[in-house]
Length: 309
Length: 315
Image (cartoon, rainbow over all chains, first blue to last red; front, side, top):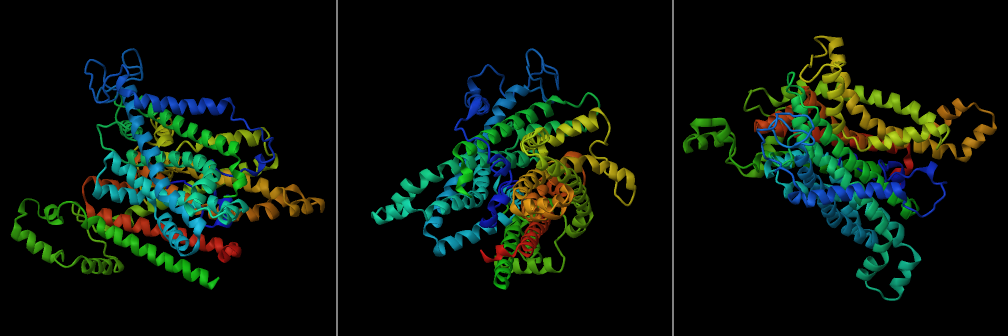
């Protein structure tokens, strides 16, 4: 993962936390009024808007994303008819942006979900049971984390193909060890608490303890870290797409639109199309930024710092 | 300590082995046969059989792996199908570009992050701290493939301050024009590392400055500057080291992006063009070298981290 959290040594996990989940000592002293605030809701609303636009893209009065409108100018500037302009193949940039959001959202949320299933569930179990299972899974997670994910994704994509579901699955698998580390650390901090002991003494089954006692407690961490994972996966997919190694054209994605825009930058006068760089970049920034803000606010709201990852 | 290192080395060997197996299978699991690519129109069944025998492709897979890894240890990574250059010479030519990018960008990132973190942590949650922190938080949402094209658009295409894509000149050929070309990609790369360093140092310094030994140093009448440099900064170097692994992985992705963006013939650029030309031995060679390098660097920083803070080995 490009800049996901690396929790190599649990004792130092807080120092290692890079990115929005970071514990910010200077802010610990802040008054902890439990309120999410307007800023949070604006950012959450923006994410929801992007999701809704992507889901209902077919119903919107937009030209098809691969429709080449020869009546419109090539690399046209924003204006009536094509609100955000056209690209080098006379396609509507707004339509491509909205349809392109699907790729980022599916890979981001789908990959994080796969990572949660493959990493999160074993993590809870191994943190609760410890012993040999824990040691083995730990070693595997370190081994996979040491591997540069981007290089692995490039290599796997090379012989397996670049369909959307394959990219989602592979990114999900590679994000699993990271999610494993975070969820394991979070579960560990609760597994030795008295209420778990009490449940055990009452004769509760392992499944009940994991599902009813531990899961609700680590849920805040899962939600706020999950959103960071979504953002990180979107960056990874975007990087792949920018390198031309994700979902192939003509399917639009923000990454491959930026790739096309960047390729046009080296063209001669009249060939460059600044809008094909500016709009996808702005879209990507807005989604990543709002995801980070929402994750950060949720972390503060749930007070995940208390968990001592 | 000894046991810890032994464990880490064992893990390292295991990972490098898996990396090599993965790189080996990369070529062998590909659809189609290398003979098709090599023979082209002469791809008759007889010719293919002869070639497969010559290439050792008729042997069992595990034997092929050991033959291949034996060649790798001798520095033979195969040769390009398209240009007939050896993979090793391609890597030797392109690696200096990556190295230059990484060194430049890390110097820039550090030169900016250190003074800013010190200034911000002196007065936490005041104007400078809040604006710097806010900016860094925003920059988390600006990965190289987003900010790169925008900066090229502004500084190379619009203002012509830096040369545009495909204007790489080797360092040995023209020193200043090389530096000029490498500045923009280094800045793009530096932004990502700067965010990591700044946030880490700032948070660490704020925490450290609240510790008792700092109060003690203050009460002894030491100057703020001395406290910052001699007492506070040193413990913070541990977490900075620890972040190196994360930063390196990010850098790899970043160098690939800026090399493609500005058409600098570094490892990433060569890898992408080899992929686009289905030049699988080159893809295999570069994948292997980059992956092993990252694993080794990660291991090195992990080790350094243990030396700086021996408490870790005990966990």
